[in-house]
Every structure is written in structure tokens, then in C-alpha cells.
Image (tube, rainbow, N blue to C red; front, side, top):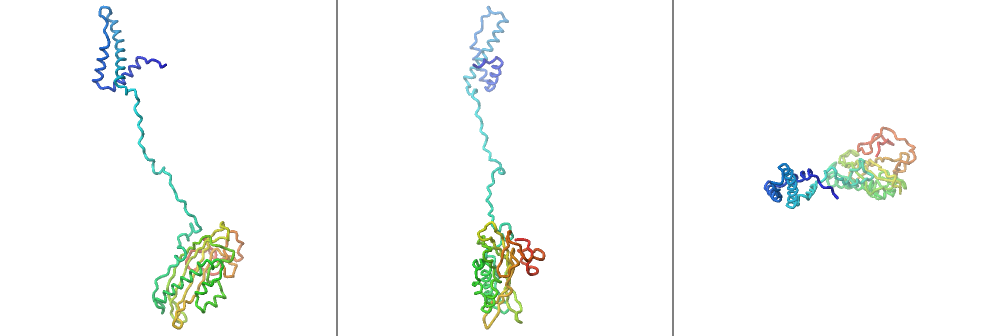
Length: 323
């Protein structure tokens, strides 16, 4: 059983409860409590004894008043409801950040990453009459340059070592016989079983310009091309060997008039490839991989940036800054 409360505890509880009631209600409760107490006969009690009884009666009145309060305000015994804290959204910086994984491909974080794809990178200027050729003839020369470029550097069959017949058919008749004796020197073709494309995307960046030059004492229109072509290659069936090979083809097409017709004569059509072996002379590109055997021809000169469109210094095998 619970212990009975002491008088002091009751007084404290009563004062706490009564403090929550307005003055009118307190006067009514006191009056009601006093009416319920009968005064003792005056003749039978000494004066001091009456004070003690009044004190005891006062305690009874307090208890009775407390009972009245409890019956009148039962809600005072009920604990106040717990207020729910307002819902506050957490600070933004504590929210988890959902990140989209970055697509990592063979061109990611390289200079080629933002180059155009394929023929989209081979842009030609507007045609105009130039060097004795009409605007229509120059326009035809620009279109021929695009065809030569696409076939020489983007044709999948030729890239994988196939015969460059499609390219030969684009040459003037008089050049075809000569080119057949020097096949592949004007096209990009990987030596058989040395490479395969790791992706269908080939990156292209560069310029095509119009100009004139003297040929056999005559001024003729000239289409000049200067491009960087970047391939993602790997050893056949070995994805772990993926690397970028950067080629730098440059060319010149002269618009010559021969017997009333225009001939698109190909000149200075060549370039370089990095990383590739320097000790081969078969017209194919022989890629160099991390596990390739050492080249028997050592590169010379200061390292050159293979992505640089300027004319490379010197000839032969040069050092590279990387691809």
C-alpha cells in the first residue's frame, strides 16, 4: 500500500491545486468547508483547548476543501497532453545525394573526348570560284575530299586490313595504276590480327581549307585537309588491352582542268600514327601495346603531342607525349 501523505504534503498539494482556481471559486469552497464543521459548546472547553480544536478543524476543512476541489476539477489530476514537436524537414546538406555514375569509355578524360563522331568532324567550307575553277567545280572538289576522307580513314573493311578497292575507285584513272603499286600508303589499315575496334565510335577533329597554288605554271584551286582521327583499339578478343591510337592524316587535292573536264588529283596524302611500330614497311599500321616487343627503331627528337594539328617536326619515328 502507498504511504499516507503528511500534512505538509497535503498543504503543498492543496495550494498547488487551489492556485489554479479563480478567487470566487476559492471563497465558495472555504465557506462550504466551514459550514460543515460544528463548533463545540463554549462552557465545556477551555479557551486554549478551543484553539487547538480550531487548528484541527482547519486541517479537516483543508482536506474537505481539497476533496471539493478534486470533485469539482477532476481534470487537475490528469497530466497535460504531450505536445508533438512540429515536423521540421532536415537540413538540405544532410540529405543523401543521388549521383548518376559517369560513363567511362575509351575516350574519357582524353583530348579526344569532345571531338566529333566520324564524318560529323569532317567539316568543309563553303564553295566559291577559285583558281580558274567555278563555284560548282570547287563544290564538287570538296565533296570528293569528303568521300576520300571517309573511305581512307573510316571504312571498317579497310581498317581491318581489307583491300582498299573502295578508295582506289575514287582516284583519277591515271593515279589508280600507280597507287596499286603502293597500296595502303594513303589509307589507315591495321596489320592483320593486330587490332580490332573496341567501339564503333571514331573521333575526328580538324579543318578543311581552300586555297590556290601554281602547278606547271598555272594557278589551280586546292583543297587541303588536316585532321586528327582517334581510334579505340584492342588486341583481338582482349578487352583488357584497350588503348587509343591517334592518327594525323593530311592531304591535298588539286582541281586540274584537262581537256574540258576537271580532275581531282590527289597530292601529299599521308600522315602519322601513335603508338605504332617504326620498324615495319609494309604499309600497315602496327599498333604498340603495353606488352608489345621492343621496337628495333628508336624514336628520335623531342616528344610531340599527337593531338597537335600543326605540321610535325622532322620525319621518320618521333617520340610522343602519349595518347
